[in-house]
Length: 219
Ligand code: DX5
Ligand code: ZN
Image 1: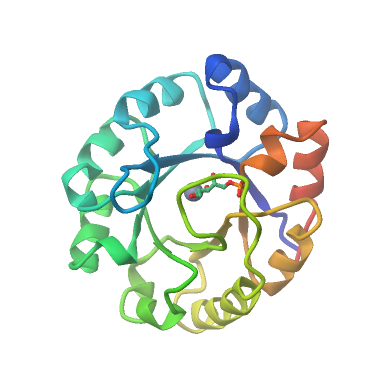
Image 2: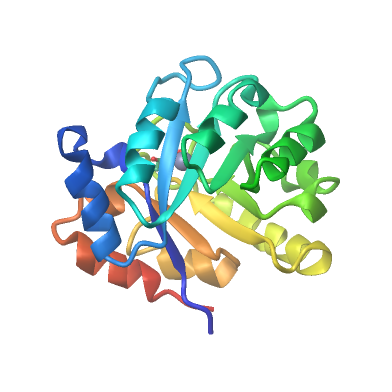
């Protein structure tokens, strides 16, 4: 059985205590640090850009997992990789030339992920899945932390798991949005390898314990 990768989302951390929050995640055994970049255009919220990623990358030894919820991501991919992102995920919905965007990420030495919204079917990934290091399946509508997990996402994880096994067995399936200590095992059983957790980690009474519980989910 494989253990689950845990990626706390810095979006739910206390930004006046960013260094401490990063240490908290690292000490809790987090594998990646998930960084949510929002532009107020593709999603109805604005967060941060390469400048903050650079500061975060400097004081962390975790994999910097950058989730670009921005229009025209090709424009900024080089900046985010220069800033220290090890993995960059773009949204299928923002990329008219998805293959080109994915190749751009890989050509700059980072791992490439593609994310899809809850309303976007798995079938839109069929032509690109062989090129991907990761699919980031959104289980809430992107824009905010602390939303409720959309139950129909479980079926999408199962479908993606089948597609991955057939077409690209090494590809990682990450699930993002509304992940909790209570649903972690169900998501991993369905096919998730990595779980993104904002609220469930940073707002937990005992984040280290929450991390251990989420990571103990296995398949
Ligand atoms: C949502 C972001 C998520 C979010 C997850 O737009 O992409 O990564 O931070 O937060 P929780 O775990 O609180 O749903
Ligand atoms: Zn995210």
